[in-house]
Image 1 (cartoon, one colour):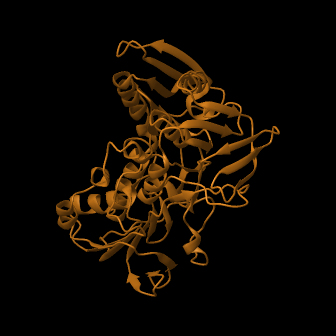
Image 2 (cartoon, rainbow, N blue to C red):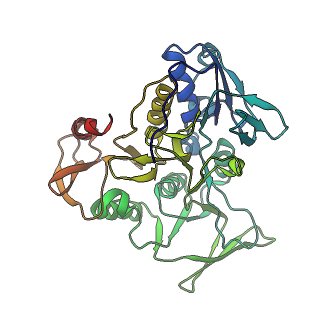
Image 3 (tube, one colour):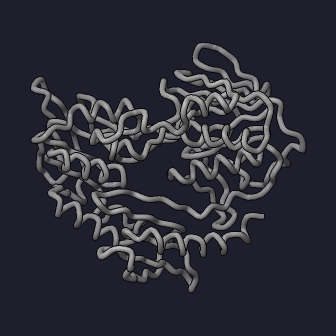
Length: 399
């Protein structure tokens, strides 16, 4: 895919669809860089932009109230001089006329648009009756939080980052937690086999019942409000609550028939532009990575901000390729795992002790003699050092 020439003058109006981290970061960057045109920010939720990662941890435990999740104060939002429309569900985009249409028929004209609608939880097909928990919004987290009491039996389907974070939080609240996962080595492609096994052992030590290599064949809830879950190994588990955390689906159905290419997200060129005048940012964006010569989509909190800032600069005329160094973290009990860069298949892992903490280590990943990624287990200082090295070697791809 080739890049589309960017306008030499700023657009008169920008509409940003999606009022979460990526959407707000786009607006903030536009204003910070001096953009004075009309900006509209459309959000489906009733809440002003808030941070999602704490939902499975500090919010779920009750340590944080909703106000603590806010990405900007009311005064800061006012200072953005932006028409913020919450509780607004977009229904269509007309790229020929330059319009976004909500589900009431109201039209929002644009000269530049940014799609930042994010993702929604992937449903579990095996659910025959009942509605299991998911964890994406404040409302989702409140519903789960109200059910997590000491002695409750919680079954979590999915041993990814979200599922394991929620498991750690729930067991600390006194719940009895079982995690079911189809993979035998979950997260090994994201963390490497050494850290993946270490993380699973940590959960086992904290009382999590891990069922790996097992699928849910049927999940149902009876009049007694108790879940009955049949597993592929022939076992049946009863639970008071079920949380499904098996990944996400990009929110793109409203773009059907719009002319925007959709394939596991909004397909973009290397500058994150989908069609002339329309960009995408955050979890929903699937852009052409010039470094790896393929389209990629990343569901990382850091990427949501970095890509949004990149898109804002692109709208204002700065033409280059988006080539980030991925960076993400997960908090599990008292452990913070941070990863910068890539862990490609076949990478050689070198594990080093770190002086940051008695239980801290650093893993360096090399492919063909080149450093591709770094992982820290309670080692933030060392991760920062190697992340700077990865950023430096990445500069060649950005032009």
